[in-house]
Amino acid sequence: MISVEEALEKILGYVEVLKPERKPILDCLGQVLAEDVYSTIDIPPLDNSAMDGYALRAEDTRGASESSPRHLVVVGEIAAGSMPTKEVKPGTAIRIMTGAPLPEGADAVVRFEDTDEGSRRPSRGDLSHIGILCQAKKGLNVRCRGEDIARGDLILKKGQVLRPQEIGVLASLGHSTALVIRRPIVAILATGDELIGVDQPLAPGKIYDSNTYTIAAEVSRYGGIPKILGIGRDSVQSLTEKIDEGLDADMLITSGGVSKGDYDIVKDVLAEHGEISFWTVCMKPGKPLAFGIIKKMAGRKKRKVPHLGLPGNPVSSMITFEQFARPAILKMMGRKMLAKPAIRAIIKNDIADNDGRRLFVRVMVTRRGGQYYAYVTGPQGSGILTSMVKANGLAIIPESSQGVKAGDMVEVQMLDWVEEQGEAKTVPIVSIAGKSESGKTVLMEQLIAEFKKRGYKIAAVKHSHGGMEIDHQGKDSWRFSQAGSDAVCVSSPDKLAVIKNVDHDLSIEEILPIIGPEFDIILFEGFKKSRMPKIEVHRKELGSDLLCSPEELSAIVTDGSLDTPIADSCKLSVFRWGDTVAVADFIEKNFVGAAS
Ligand code: AMP
Ligand code: MG
Image (cartoon, rainbow, N blue to C red; front, side, top):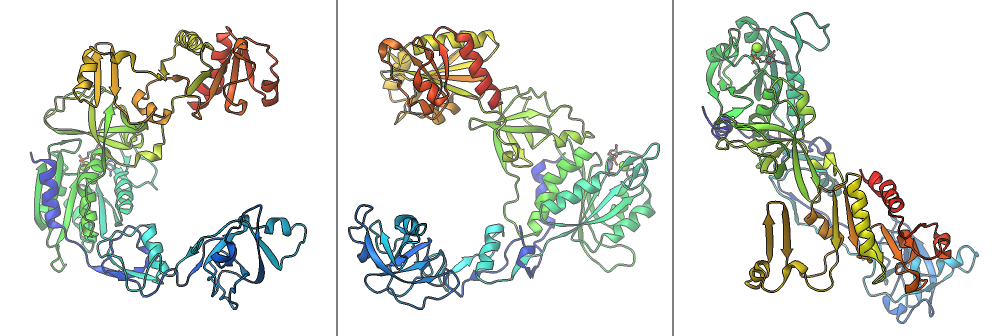
């Protein structure tokens, strides 16, 4: 058995970077630039306005304010795309649009909002003058010639991958084409007597050929050009004919016929035409793999085509494609970064022993509170292609591992980026605010008990203005932090406390990831300045006014009169002190349901 790395190294040793070609920039997405690109122009080509407003001399606005506008004579107007014909002399201004060249004499632009134009226009007032309501510094709202790109600058380097922004930069320099490393043509051949094409009726004993489509889509996805050869039968003649059709490609990928069955003859056919190695790769799925160089075929001139023989099982062929074909395609395209991006995630299921091979486990990764979690997508049979549909990553369990337990950290190779799945769940949060001694803590206690009764997993956060109760002098945790530790954790069989030194009063956004994502609701006591949903506890003996402004509140719990006029004016929900069930219902209905 050889390792995944050894197999990859051998394969990459045989594939070469392809030659460059010049083509229209829009066809170059994802390709590698094969030349340095210098600019022959300045961008922007002239000083111009960054705002719709008035071009003027900054010194003419000295001391201007809303209460004491400076009035200037408007001597003209310039739209983007035209050249100024007038100069801005002292005491004058020119109306100017975003992108229009700055007229001679002007050194600043004051936007419409900072002039009195808004009040002149509707009243059809005098537009031959304009009142400037703010003092402008030289250069205000002016984009200088060459501030983005200066003539002669090296803008894009050879070897750079062209993304939409690089393609846009090429266009901004006036280039309609670029010199890029050619895309590889990858011939794809499915093999097996049981396979039929997707346009045929399904006959007994047959299955549709899916590998051709998975592999072709992967080739396109990573920038290659698939050339579909169709289905080769399990006979020397059929396979020879089909492979022959693929020999003008840059690479040949076959699927099936490389294991030990009676009809696995791809290897025999290939052995006859070139060098071929059969490997048992130390991975699961995907153990059998063939790789070789096809050197000659009947009636063809000598040509070396790398051949990758993937296993037939749909999941195995896809996973081996990701590990071996993808890097080979990227190398041919001139790319330097060949590894699939990986993250570290907490695995949510146990994974049993891997009999000494590297396991690639299909998982769905989600992100909550800044942490990645990986969920195994169900049965892992190498024929179950729908398990790939449910997955966005492959958890990698190393050869040396004895299996992993739920909660362990694992490496996950991302098939798709996790953003595509979005945040799986945001934990609803509610703050209980109120004046000191209003009974916030009592309401928190009652709500916690009520939500526990309803089966919720609940976290409560208390803002402590004084010190930390669990961090008292003499306690071990206190001694550790006195000794200089920036964080102290106290872990017991059923509880965990983390005491971290922080350099500022943390916001709820900073606190949430530390609490973790596993709760159904988080109640905060206090935090009256944050923007989370708030419920204020109001006590009539502490005054009729509220602590928070009513627009910020979702509800009030009060022992005062239920028809508080403030509440009425803001359509706030008002609950009677003690009616905790109603408050919990309100939170459940408005926040818990809305967040999941
Ligand atoms: P093989 O490696 O040829 O023994 O094939 C292993 C398994 O993969 C068999 O169950 C095949 O039917 C299946 N298989 C092979 N090629 C394809 C394909 N192109 N599409 C779907 N299944 C395939
Ligand atoms: Mg077969």
